[in-house]
Length: 415
Image (tube, rainbow, N blue to C red):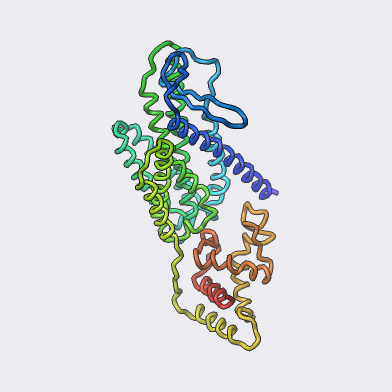
């Protein structure tokens, strides 16, 4: 029952996280579009200069006006866009806690990367998040804040360092999620610490009849720009756990960095499009960076060293593929070995009664309850255990290279 309730907690938290994230990112991209598409106002409000835009949606016309400055005459009610960010971050951290921090041996630790205790893994993960955010804040409050280009480069170098630490300590899946969580924390922190307080200061000055200090708007604008550059890579990091091809390789750090570049260039290209600016190198650069990711993630053939354990299965496969009327891959000794590997290394998660904490149903809906199930999922087994080696998850069941070689031999014989 506890595992069942944990499943529901993760499902509802993930649902909330996705809905809040859609609202937050949607609002952010809408205002970017609005800022870049508005025209000089022909219907000035309060005689103040500004920009306006007419739009149609849902069967009605909308007249959107932005003040260039803050009017002394403020309405009684002003809508704030902040709770979308707060709920997204809170629900995301709730998910990270339920899945990764409460199950470090399953999701954080990969002994092939770095062997450590569950407690050390949890503390290290929190250290990456907290330290990464504090370092970003320190850079933004340093003298670099007066030089947008230099600050942008420094933040990029800081994220590179964080990515290096994450990929050196944690499983590939966890490293990508940690980077997404760090970037999400930076974005939410910008809203909570700078953007919203700055907007409150501007409104408070206007109510007092004072000229608002422009520094508040400048800081908020700077952090908003940072958020727009971080958004696209952060979203991809968050969904990366569904695509082992991204992290099940030896080039995870390079993949993360190229994805940061890709997302940043897509953001620039989007703004250029809204402004009517044409810079060919921007979309070309984004495509080239994405091609770089595809190349780094491409599967590479690896031949296991010949041993008594691996050579015997190969000989068995050869015999099975040439034996009289016997179907390839149906040699009983080989079939027994494959079944044993799947039972020992895979069935803990992929069965009707999984024994991994937090699972009340087969992971990804895949269950191996007999040889027929194994045969039906042969291609998937080969892809996950041999090609990208993303399964077993963090190799928690310690599948050996010899066993992967045997599964590869079995797959080649059945093609």
